Amino acid sequence: MSRRRKPNSGDPRKRKPDAVAQRAASAYRCGHCRSRSLGVTVDQYGINHLNIGHDPSCPVLLGTVDDAPDVLRAAAAAEGPLVVVLGDFEGGGEE
Ligand SMILES: [Zn+2]
Image 1 (cartoon, rainbow, N blue to C red):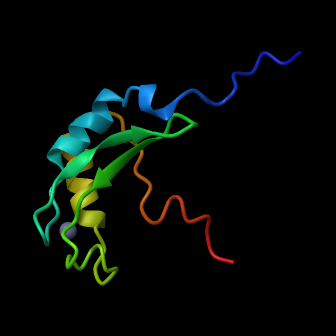
Image 2 (image 1 turned 30 degrees about the horizontal axis):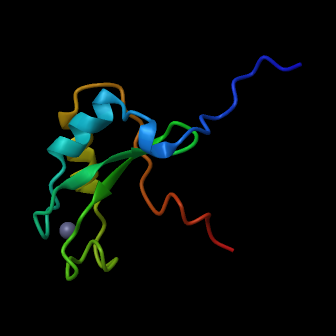
């Protein structure tokens, strides 16, 4: 019998986002369309995801420019331990 913890497989709507991630979400502001975060969701592994509601014409949403500077500014403003993963996290990589 394994004593390892299984990934958090409960209802994602019931998982509470980390306080640092919530502060980063509050601090996020798109440098192009000025949109803010729509909130933080937590996946089945406990990883917090900032959801951003860019305007439909935003160059970040269209992939013309990168949002890395905006994400890093928000992470710095969160003032806590935070690992930032940039890019299409749920895309599964290139094939
Ligand atoms: Zn935007």
